[in-house]
Image 1 (spheres, rainbow, N blue to C red):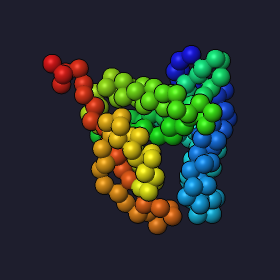
Image 2 (tube, helix red, strand yellow):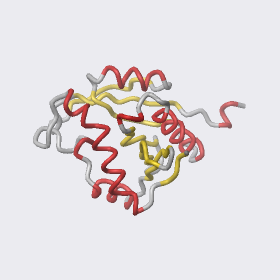
Image 3 (cartoon, rainbow, N blue to C red):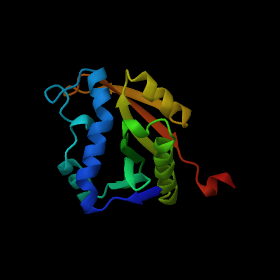
Image 4 (cartoon, one colour):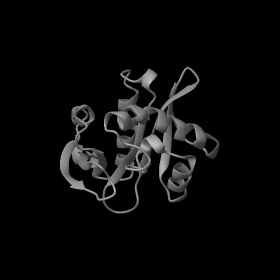
Amino acid sequence: MGIREVETADIKSVAAIIRAANIPVAEQFNLNCSNAPSHPSFCTPEWIRTGMDRGERYFVRETAGEVAGCVAYDSPGPGPAYLNRLAVLPRFQNRGMGRQLVDHVIRLARADGKTEISIGIIKNHVKLKGWYTSLGFETAGSKRFRHLPFDVQFMRYQVISARNEQ
């Protein structure tokens, strides 16, 4: 039981977890391959491979020898870090695993000297927005993208480094 970094051999299973965890969201917001081809419910192994090739790091949360969830951490240079592709399989949800994966990303960002973590979610996904707010994220504006059938709500988490706590 724990969190470990994804290896190349894990890519297919990580993509499957991301798809499975996001299918209910796609159904809730009537998303499909035509109107939202980049939604995580359509994630492919190539998406994961491409992200990893450019430096995005993926982590999985295991329980009883089974992968239950995953998250991606991207720290592309100066500026914020990004929390991407957070996904917990429906049968493992509401057990604190998503929180553990978010906490892992916060620790990584802190170790990298980042002061902010940024995410983007569907603006009208009230339940998810409330969950991230409960973890300490705050809204940071929204934007409409022409290629998406929904507005994107940006949220940020202010990372407190050990230096700032002294």
